[in-house]
Length: 223
Length: 219
Image (cartoon, rainbow over the protein chains, first blue to last red):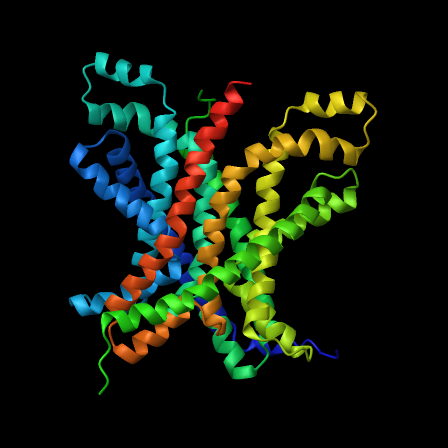
């Protein structure tokens, strides 16, 4: 039981760590924006869209929500090339993040849409808006505002889940930790430091999403 | 060259599924026990207990499960403890799921009306008696659907243990892929097996939620 911590080793690997942090941030930025956009579209289909599309989206959501992210990633990176679709590590990682967050955010946003009082739709109709216009101008923003906390925590969960993309050699923060570990054999230090960075990123991301919500939503209680 | 039929692939994957199920069960049961202990700390009157549970939850919910697995696997090994993959996997998954279960259950305990605490206190019950006879039976009803729902997260979480070398469904998928060069088929099947494990749980969680809510409204 005598282990001496030596964090000094990590110092010379700081470029890898910085690069890893940047790639993790890039993954969550792209995954977050595109994933939530996909989620909005899917939620619209599930709540108000054309009947023939509903089962397709439902199948997508159920399939993604009930399989591990790791397998989705492997399927996209290793499986799709046999269909002739060869993706780079980073593209595959990004695609997996978008597909994953899209399914989860779809369910969350749908709950927000379904909590919208029926009168809102009728009010939109009485202003001669089409169903889509009503959705876009009347329903969407209050729905998003209602479920913003749930959506934020889902984004944080997906960010933490992105650690797995190191397994297809996308060079995120976990990849950097594995790299340092394999060079220095200081596994404990490498993983403790990268875990702390993840914790800091998670706390930071939560704050940022809170601020984003504060800026994009009208500041009054919706209910 | 050996050729593999679809049945060969599927049989190997199904054999490995046993370990996914076993690890999920161990994690769920262990996580529930640890989580229940944490729950009592989280809602206790002692400030230190509350703070400990709060930081524990923050730590395990704010860091990737993969990192927790790495620390359990590589980290403990450095202290001279020989850590087999299954032990590290079980330990990390138990501690991780405990954090989430505690937070879920705290929400359920808080959903019980405050008057119930006051009423039981006015009957001269101690804190433990209040929990045992008044609060927990009511909270349990609210807790069942989200707890069943979270078991899906545990099953999906076990996939990560393949990375530290525990041979369960995901690892078997990688091994079989390396032997057959059919990643599309193999990972497709792996995904379907996970789906077959998780979907009934998700569905029953939804159904339970509807059922228990209706019963609740009729009270």
